Image (cartoon, rainbow, N blue to C red; front, side):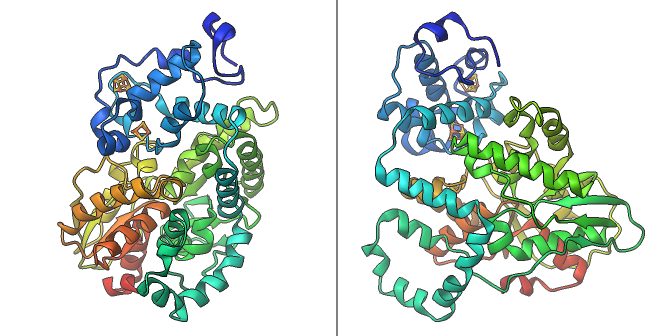
Length: 442
Ligand code: SF4
Ligand code: SF4
């Protein structure tokens, strides 16, 4: 644990368990370069809802000049955790560590309202449990396929429900058949690598075709793919929401599962999960049995685009005549610093025309559970992104995170657009399999 300064010991509003680091706070020189990319500052223009303002609030609380009351907390609850400020910051302020520490403090020290507690508990107990998500598939399929969803939406019945429930319904993925990934998928041809595949929770149950495509592409490129079936949720949602203790337990189980699999690399295909597992060394720094193993594990984790960019292409890419708008997910571009690799992958597909979405640094409003707890702000950000995408007249939108897929599909639908939003790997898979772009519209 870092040494506490005298100001923290005497007066701080934070407790002594990993308060936001004064060393990081003091690196902020208040230049404001981060302001134009901060989605909440872009929306509301309020200093306290900017990265600089939030860092100032942390400093005040750390010095005992501000108390941790509901107004103070609201400025941190409204942060999307998109990390755009980190990319923009010329002073190297690690805002990610600050917000993570601040949120853990808030969850330990602040009592949330009963409604908030219930809503948060529902999300954490559902979205971090693949088996519970699987049980939701049948009722959701009936709701979608029976035409009930169309009737409910058409008659505007959703308006009778609370805003947060409306937001959840609007973001429901269009369910198809559930595809499974085998415990071990053999490499096609001579084996180049043995890799593990992190299956995710929402990805595993609601975007199973993305996991299946990931395993197929890796195998086609000569990788033996191990997908431990007993792997739990990686805890990303919990870390980003300040639920540290529960996240630590899931991280330990994830490490155990992949150590048993004995793989060189752990492949992630959901950017939020990817940024979380890469940072396990930090999350488990106080766990004597796991601290070193967590660092090693984090160093092995790579986004699918990073893994493929490091392999000389072996599988033939067939023509895919599509105009594709690529959306940088925040947890890929800002948290993991992965920008060029997905573009390189897409550019390797013959016939595919890649277009860039303006304001790429700014979040689409998905941001973990942000679009479920702040539906109005999330919709504004989603609509802004959808208008920019719409102007590009793309056939398909590609991205690297399931949350972004849902958020942009929902925002495009509000604009009356049916442009498919897919994972980058699905385009590469379609090209390798020689499928037409039409298959992505199903
Ligand atoms: S993480 Fe995103 S929303 Fe939060 S302060 Fe940084 S730029 Fe703003
Ligand atoms: S860009 Fe960095 S140094 Fe400048 S105000 Fe933002 S966080 Fe502080």
